[in-house]
Length: 317
Image (spheres, rainbow, N blue to C red):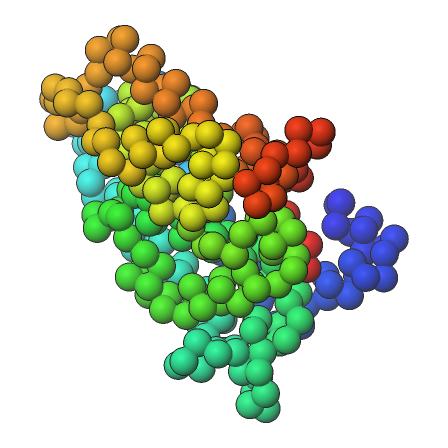
């Protein structure tokens, strides 16, 4: 409804919203939901927390995977045998790969083997809609940036995690994102052309720990966030400028504390260790997220204390 009103009120928005590529905005939205849900659903499967169970059901639904009748049961019954969580994770991995392959099919139409954009006429083009992206392009760029960081950080629960878009069948997708990263609108939103963006996944990690803390443990999520932050050039530069050199060194060099494993083979913390690690995970200033602290207007190592930066949740075409 918001987009429809904007189309009526603004000729520019109307032009941007008009479909010019092979993918409609509705198709792009559905593909994005399916991919993102398939990538994170495996993390919350098996949670006994009410919010975790509800979120798992919603993710399975969005991914197009039938919710097993026994989803809310923790034991086998004659009428409802427990479906293996591993089997569901395998199915979700297949769904994610299928979504990536479909996106790849649309994106590869505008790229040649060298990663340079092309139109049917042979002239350069960077996006599905041609030289100028349309609304489906903009939505897909955001989806792929999040998916890329979910995969590389290990937040996505796949058998081969950490993984990549290329491994899932999308060899052209990073080139597509790199074209986006060169646009002024991308730089205005993210303030970096790096595709490794810890802030893009920070809200998701926080949500996973909140809804399903029994299966999305602080230890596991902290490891993923440390991996994402260590790979994020802009995060490293900004935290260094903020006096965070020691915290950065910890993120890149120190392993998680040695802890005992529970019966699921996962690390388990004592109460005081958990509190300490939660602080380490949630207090750091990731750059770029809509629901987190932001480092204000990083400019060459100086800090502008008088203004806060904008969210990068939406890319202006």
